Amino acid sequence: MSSSFDRFQKRRLISSYFSVVLSVFLVLFLLGILGLFIINSKKLADDFKEKIAMTVFFKNEANDSILKAFSKELKVAPYAKSTVYVTKEQAAKQHTDIIGEDFMTFLGENPLQNSFDIHLKADYVEKDSIAKVEKKLRLNPMISDIVYDKQLVNLVNDNIKKVSMWILIISGFLTFIAVLLINSSLRLSIHSNRFIIKTMQMVGATKSFIRKPFVIRSIKLGMLGATLAIIALIGVLIYVETSFPDLGILDNKVLIAGVLLSVLGIGVLITWLSTHFATQKFLNLRTDDLY
Image (cartoon, rainbow, N blue to C red; front, side, top):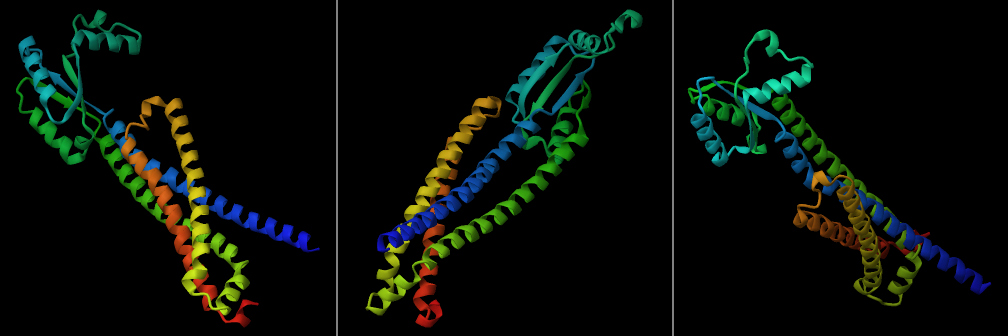
């Protein structure tokens, strides 16, 4: 009978440990995914912004020396990430390929102009900044027109601000849920040992002495859950990098390492605090209240 009861208690203990590790793993994995998304969201937003092109058209009077001088100016310009020079002949060919008909056969001449497609750096793809760049470029008397999608620029920036706000809200909500879930699992684990805690207290053991083994055990379980979460996050990073190499998700290794270390730190911190307060509660209870 005694050995059967011991086996039952052992199974309960293992089940309790497993639930704690599983809770820590799932919560920290979700927080880690969110953290990785946050550090890469700016990069993804910047990449999208830098795909928006500003096209600068030159008058037909602009000769090769003027165009070359402008090209050199763009290479050192702080706002230009990349530029592509498109001759009017290349533009005509592109139009022909798109519409499937050579429009110059009935026009008799090429009405298009030489142009530069300028991809601005992400910091300059803002309503005010891009307007300043446009104003500066228009000072060149050889430039006939500057075209870019103003509505798209405003839409992108507005949506990025909205997404960033929701990310912060979701981050706060998930962190709160994480603390509740892990705290709940640890409280249930310690609740099953409440009689042992009270017995040790009755024979004269100090609160810190009673609390110490429970805290150490919980920290170990937290570290185990956090380690499993880190392994899973590394697996996700490798999968995304292999499947979508253009995203360059592993480029910022310092921030990624920071997120993984934060996952480990949060796992240890939450389990330590939760265990400390849970044991304190049972230490302060009267013996009659244990039932």
